[in-house]
Length: 336
Image (tube, rainbow, N blue to C red; front, side, top):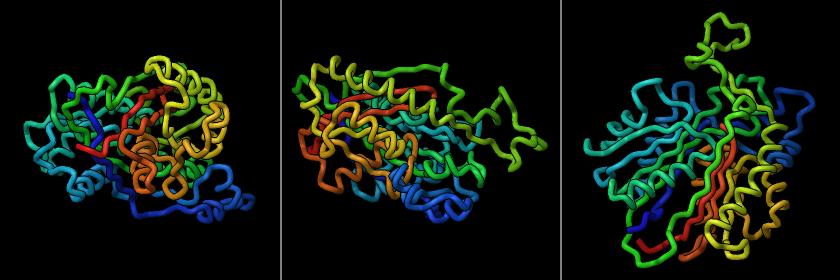
């Protein structure tokens, strides 16, 4: 029994933030320059009363509406988010009842950002191939805009909100090569402060009268240069380690889909790894950096654009907040 990806759908909130919207907030900002540097034209932002679970439910409902599966067939729900509805209970439990999933369904949250989809695939594969579950719903849902002040243009021009729902099922196979895997993971918590929401948790509770948080909500801090340096140093090694572990060469990979951080970073990584442009898929212009959802959204759009074919070998690479990183290979299947 091998775990495979059967279907992916995604959902974005209705509110849009264009480059013109951002440029209007600061005199020396140019909309075209924002797009040239980030590769992003539009990003989405949740409404005032909209949460990550709302996006997650909408993405899952799109999956059910596609005919890929029905709610009563799900026997495990994995939710990756860094913006849970509450400290407790687990947001996945709330989503279980909203979607009408069976009460025999397992459900859990895991808190990871840009590498979250890779980790989620690893968890889902383990559940299916050890016969703990037959059908796993992996949802990634994030609302980083909740952590941004209106004047935080550096972060607002990059991040957008969104959710993706990925259906994984077991398939009998005699293939020696896995449909998903192998995996390479990594962690360096020493870089945690370079992308952090420092207040609002138990270590640093948010005070209503905190002058550093004028909106009364937690605020995200990102050290862009440090994140860029980290990425350029770790991703090439990550890619090489995955190739060594899988026994593959760069030319064996049909398509590379990296975490869609921003175009500036992706261009540097592609050139450093000498990946041909026609093998390097990018989709962030109309969605922005949706954190853990960038890879599944890109996978979905690659399919829409006719870039995915049965038997193709695709490398997925996630990296960022934590620091946390992970990579895997998937052998694309159009037969389930």
